[in-house]
Image (cartoon, rainbow, N blue to C red; front, side, top):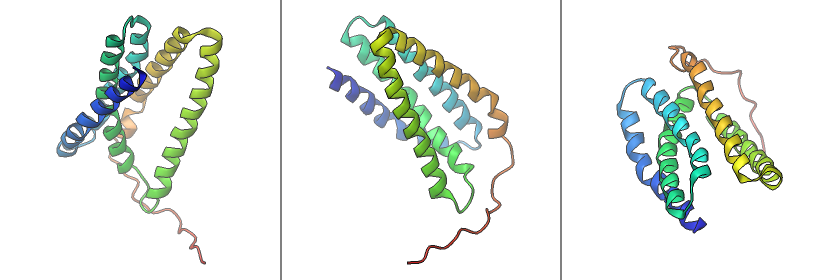
Length: 165
């Protein structure tokens, strides 16, 4: 059943995401991207609280559908905002830093979550994940002026050193 629950998430996210991304692309400005990001983050961060009340697999499947919809909102909106603010000429490095930070965070969260689940139980983990997730969603609201700033990072960084073979 766990495999089906994961499948429900990925099929939902993957099926909806291109349509939401298209909507974001054809809508001018970054405000729609930002508000999709915030709304998706809030919705995704409610899911761990839902796990506290799930009593059967149908509840888990419904929560996975909600999580898939939420992440279908988050991923393209974050990618659009991040891409627009990347330093020109440093796209690969910028995306590698974004991916590296995400990887370290996921790895550390998994290890810490495993320790917490073993010592405090899964209910405590769901509460902690939900609370920290909601805090991160609220923090997005604090940076909205930087996202909507008309300033763009179009000035090149100092020249990169050329690699020679």
